[in-house]
Length: 237
Image (cartoon, rainbow, N blue to C red; front, side, top):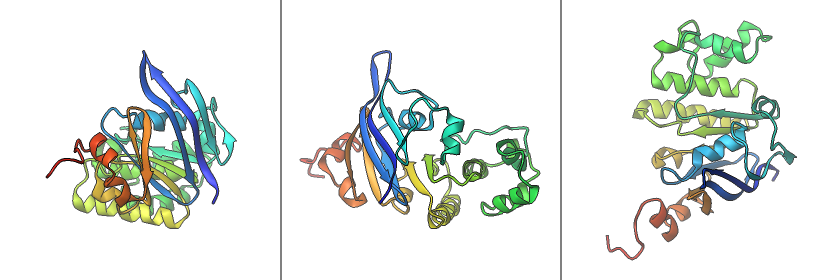
């Protein structure tokens, strides 16, 4: 299969802190990789490096084999990358539809409405973002991120703060995007929801990938139990 994202020797330090400390990672096209790790492991920093929102101190980021280190975020979007981050940032005074218009002023309004329909947001098209619920803002942020039909989508804790019904709605959206051929890398602490979408899980700890494998194998790894769950494999219970 084609390697859609390749990270090679990626490093980023902040005042001596090794936030990302030599990450090597390959994500194949059509796959969904879950990324987990304790708080402070460097997960969001890694996403920002892939998106171009931060520059790496060393290493390479390749999209579909193309080196994009030093390439601006908007250029990476044109190369097929999309992202939605934890707090689903939005413009509070803009309407739902206007969030898409900002992304592409040349498109026909009917196209925006059809796109929003796929996220259950068409009826809210004229509502300002400040009036949306957290779940609606998350869906809007993903709708914005997918407007240009990215090949690779980065999702930072998409299920955080959602109730069971809202999480189920988002799972349906992600399944539909998977069927359309979108590749995912998903940061998530809610493992029950992550396991419904991820085919593999990579574990980041202290800026390094310490394990990668099938979900069950990964979550039962002694190293992961110690680093992520704080459980010693010699514990009796």
